[in-house]
Image 1: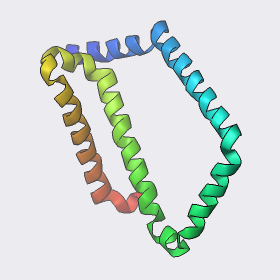
Image 2: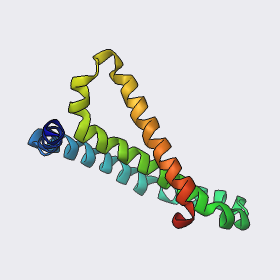
Image 3: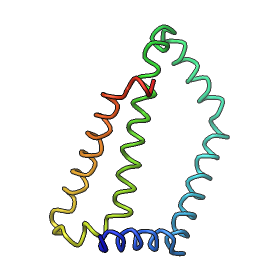
Length: 130
């Protein structure tokens, strides 16, 4: 239990260090500036292309399958957020116990377990989500 608390404390200390915040802030500002420039330069073309694609889709299909499509995107986001939280808070605890050669497989196992867990939630409790 103490290792768990130390791992969570270390995760918070690492996330809130100034150099980590600075790297995340600079990267975020740089990427935001790129996407703002792309948005201003290509907005009309993007909207006309989106309208063309939406006009090709029958409305009945969007109405019947739209919730499932949005649900799939939400499921994917939940899986990725769960993975990020697990690695941020428990990554140091796991890295001490897992050999460096198997650490890449550990990522795959964590993502797969998270995906299976949330898929079961979606499967059994999907009527609450739609």
